[in-house]
Image (cartoon, rainbow, N blue to C red; front, side):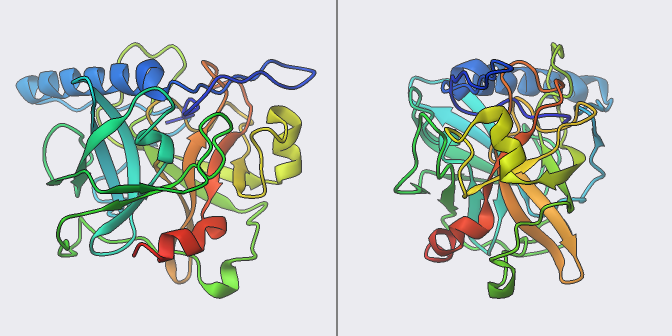
Length: 290
């Protein structure tokens, strides 16, 4: 998961480059990605082999991210899409708002997959239609691109399923600039990848300032509630990674600092930043739904 291809809309910016971020996530990314993942997982089951892919990163070890929740998304109209999410309590997860509604496609159900690095099989699989998008979510700018998922019952924690820590009061003012964090998801591993990642992949990314990020995407997309990571070397998030976690490892354990939101359209390996919803900016929204 080198890069996650933006997750939401079509935008052109910057005097030096045309950087697009899609609005039609499900049609452009989610639906074809889900179809390929499920088809390839079926083939893997038949052949009993493993597939290892992720853009600029590596295949995630089993149980490396017990807080990661794969989302197999049922859209109105009958098609499937894919996103990621993060377990933050016994029965709540956090994802990107555009995974539920991208401006064109509306989901009617998430199948949350916990405790498995595969999307189509294994783990604890829980359907839910109780999803709360941030009330100020803006489809065209991906501002406030965060949503809370309600599970219908509490999940027992074990070695494979554990919630991730949310920022403490003392951490709410930390911009995390210069810190290294890890993004994880089912996203493409290269811009030209024809298939899809059938298992969760991960990549280490360094947080950069919003000023540096806005120089690429402009303030149309980079708000104070945005967190960006450096794409130098062709690393970042890509198509299918939407909603997944950006995790900072601290002495108190893994800390959720970002929710995968956008990157440059069709150019995950181009070296431009990846954009995330900054979790510290949404602490109140998330907390009120725990």
